[in-house]
Figure 1: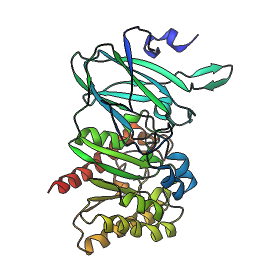
Figure 2 (figure 1 turned 90 degrees about the vertical axis):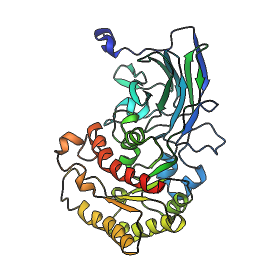
Figure 3 (figure 1 turned 135 degrees about the vertical axis):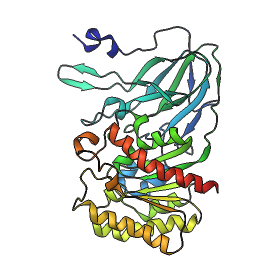
Figure 4 (figure 1 turned 180 degrees about the vertical axis):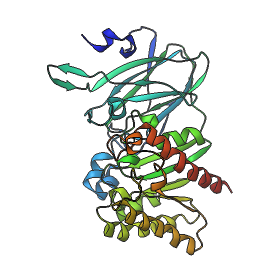
Length: 360
């Protein structure tokens, strides 16, 4: 017997109606965010393939994971459906299938539901389908702004949106801050291990502040390479969040790269607000994290001493310090949803100040 037979709330609602019209999200009036558009193949990407390959093999592999990519539109359809194709579905033991491979939906920035893939079972073997579909009934009638967040840890080659035939569909309003907040960092930046995409800390901040963002977190592979700094320095952005010390191979490596990485961004962007974040520590005073935090803080202090008035520092040891690791992480390292809420609280405060500064 399957769980959906025991509890109807676990039943997946597929597209089983005849009044559905499918739209390709790459076409107007749909607007994609956090996506690199200048590519010829079908995969959605977070940065150009040649730039990713020049950084390291990990970034080359991970840049097609769709963390932070969103599609936005307006509709008065009473439901929204998707048909998604994920060529190589990912199933990690410490993340939900929705966080790895699913999409979630926000209706006027309020969470409405998740598009989760069906897990197939054959004997003791579990697999995910390459293509799946699901339909979500909206909470209220009328015209709404819809945001669909892409998966955090898998590749997507196609996403079709299903709306009721003859329903109105139009472009969503632009974000208040149209230049994105750009985040560069580790697996935590990429979204590990949020239960669903909309619970990554950047997505939470985006909804609160009505700001676009780009997620350039690369699990285990954000090592502060000069090639990455050069690429980031040329991006249009309203705020830059520098958060890679978790992936630096050693304290010496971090010391050799952190200030120069900051300086590369600052030289190309003399008035850009920059937020420096040290790794969130599940246990305050860690012998591993403390020396790294001091290096990050030294970059901040040096910037202040040089007269930089558009730089902020978020002490990672302050993010979780009120809570036991069991409350904020899934494994002592990667945040759960509450952990990401805590990150959004503290980092979001700095991002808001930075955005306010960018308008002055």
